[in-house]
Every structure is written in structure tokens, then in C-alpha cells.
Length: 380
Image (cartoon, rainbow, N blue to C red; front, side, top):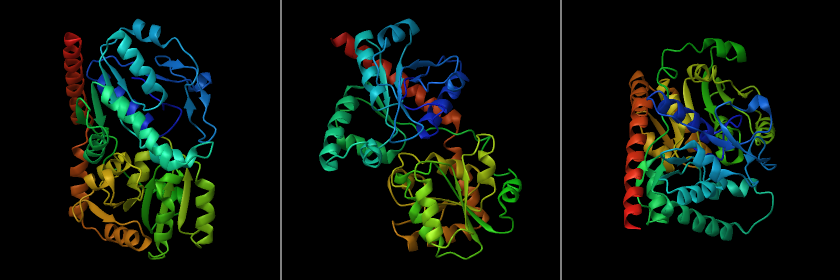
């Protein structure tokens, strides 16, 4: 399982790798992660294979495996049955070359709309219309060379099929969640006490604090809500300083709590302490945090775009809003006023994303990729 992003980096891709690896190992399969070397022994895992990398200066916490490596020998010695590439850039190219040379089936997992994120973090200026066209030519090439492609949501699957109609096999396999860890009966009161927000309405936003997450829209929407409503911004990231400045300029210092990075152990409790969840990012290919929030029985206010509209159903488990602060504020208010039925529906929705369900879909995709590869080998 080669990946462009892995621990100690904290993002949706590294979470997907960790979660998927555990789910497959629980079913008796062997999974070897191949990741960029984070550079320090304390950040390395004994059973993970690392390729030399360098820090990505434009996005702190990320590492790029740009150096030459003995990748062919590494893959050959591991004697694997299938390559499941969880990256779309450096590791994808390496994985494609290895799969071709070793005649192995390869599954490409499309996690991230790199074409949209790149404009925020590129170290050099670009003509972004031209750069986006170039990137999609590259993505089309690798997508149509893979034996199978995994999209984490139906919306992304359709978008990829439009961009790369020659994809051999498209599978929609969301990243699963541990329903025993994220559940509605958790006690979030210690978290409220920790941050001094007892007795107030709490709206949670959990993600990296990055520019593409559109968090400024949520902050502006907060100014339209009742004064007893608090926004809990859980996470850290490159946009944190900008968001704190915006919070101060909007006069919301007493209504927005920046928690910083939260441990995996405490994370479910931060959902549990909230009355509602909000996400305004147009960048999501799945929106894993939305599923985690629903598993904890939270109604979700989400922007009406891409994968989020696949999961959030108006008036059933949450409410959708447009890309403006009034619409966002109204959706949050509706979530805060939701009855118990909507909260139960949120949990029911999340149960469709259990580790058991998603792992079975993934194994079916592996079998199909192996079949397609074998057929291609017979024809060659």
C-alpha cells in the first residue's frame, strides 16, 4: 500500500491508510505500507517501508519521496499479490512502473483533488488554468492505466469517469469508520468543561485548518447566530493564524475556540461534546469527518457540493447550504433545532460506512483488479 501521505502527517489520506490497513489485517490479510520517510526514528513504524523524502516547505507536516530508490527490489522482495496505491503523485508514478515491470495488478485510490489544492501551496507561481489542464492530462493517464480505480464517493466517481472515460473498472469504496469508537452515547461534558463552554450551544468543525477548507465562511456565519452559540475549531494547520485574525476582526473571540491538535484518543469526545457539526469545504472527496460526526448522532450542516451532498440529506440527517454566510448560518441553526429523529437518522447513515461494509467492498475491488490484470496478461 504505497502512499504519498502517512503518519506523522495527519490528514484524510493517512487516516484512510491506517484505517484500511487495520480492517484488512483484522480479516487475516497482510498489508505493507510504503511511505515517505519522516526523517526521525520516533516517527517511524517498525513494519512500514520508507522511501527517502524531503519536507514539503509550502505545507508543513508533509514529506515528498523525490529521491531515487530501490523501489523495484523492495516490491519484488515483498512478494505481494496486489498494489493498492493511496497516492496520486510521486508514489503513483512509482507504483505504476513497478506494477508494469513485475506484472502485478494495481488499484489507484483517488483521495484528493490535487488540481484544486495545488494553487494554495505551490512554492512557485503558475498559470493555474494551464496547470490544471496539465494535471488532468496526467491524472487521465494514470487513471486509465490502473486495473481498477477507487473513488470514495459516487460524485467523485462520476467526475473521474467524465475526465477519464477509459477507466477499466471504477469502484466506489468509502473509507470506513469504527462505529464502536464513534458513537452517540459518549460523554462529552469533560471536553466542554476543559474549554469553558458548559451550558452553551456548541457547533464543532473538525479538520486541518487549511486554506482550501473554506473555514472563513463558517466564521462569518457565526456572526449571524445567537450569542450563546460557540464554534469549536478542532485541529491545526497552515491557515490557523489567518483564521485567528479573522475571528478577532469579526469580534468573535468569546465565541470561537481554537483547540489545536487533538489526540486520536480524545477525538470522539470532541464530537460528543457538540450539538451539531458543520463543514463548508468544497474540497472533499468523501468528508470522513461528516461520517464520524453522524456516527456520534450529530446533525450535519454541510455545503451543497460534491461528496457532501451524497451523504447529507436535507431534513433527514442534516441540512445543506450554499456558499454564502446567511445560508450557512441558517443550516447550522436548523441543525441546532433538530429533533431526536434527525440525530437517529444521522447514526443510521453512518452505519452504512462501517469497517465491515467498506472492507468487503475493497476486497471485491481487489478481486476484480486481479481478474482484469490476468485477462490483460493472457491477451498480451
